Length: 364
Ligand SMILES: *Cc1c(COP(=O)(O)O)cnc(C)c1O
Image (cartoon, rainbow, N blue to C red):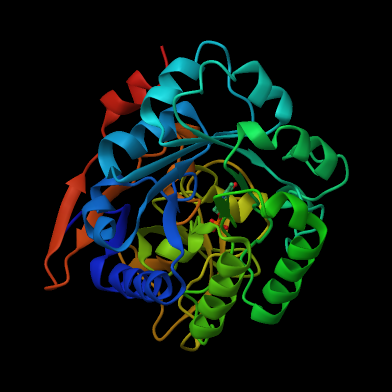
């Protein structure tokens, strides 16, 4: 048995998402690029590659990882490129997407050999979290002034518009895309490609994939553009668990189980967005599942079990792929979870273990 803690990627579950992505590509003509900022566990790329068109990135390192480990089409976006990065970035990228027209003009010469785009900020979004809302007041994420964008239209062949956040509501997506069509038509008509970004939760249960495909196709036909999607969370949702073990049990007006992991180190988004981990909820024995770091609020959440927990019991934390493994860190020196893959035939393969040497080499 693999020692805990470890992230366990379930190939069969991942393939369910991949088949939905393939179906959407097929029916809509849209291309799908994995957003590496959400999931960059490259040992899983062999599973994903046949079903996706490539990757998109938010930095030079993600871009390079996409080029070297995923291959296929490689889009490069960054909120701001530096003078030191730009030549290397253009060397890896098929397309480079600038956040502002200022960056586009600054790096016009360096990027002349590849396709270029600019990020368009439609100034509305579906995000309920201010922290993650690209349309928040004073947002730095993209250009919103169509006159400014039309000014540089001859330098670009496309735009990227990332404005959805785990949006499960097709009607809302449809209406907002309609708004983009109305507000930005004079620009869209001049482009070859439009990326609609990520955040569309089309691999979720009961999402009307056929309607989404028809809508994307209609958009693509109307403006004569290749549509791209950049699914992050939708690519890997529900595919991975974090496997932990109970180290100690105590009582303080609640039964508490301390496990060999930490949300601050291994599931940081729970802390940032003040959410609970997805834990077992069946049975008569409730416990608060807590991390082993010394942060008081290092709490995975409330769980229920069929029998009282014992030291050594294992617990599976669901949905631990997106924005999780990419954010893991060495806070408190807590042992880093290994990475394992449960193959479609049921065998579990240990891919990577982390040791004290990895901790040591993360600082100096
Ligand atoms: C974060 C991000 C994505 C992926 O978003 P998900 O919600 O994980 O699908 C795609 N494109 C851009 C530009 C992003 O910033």
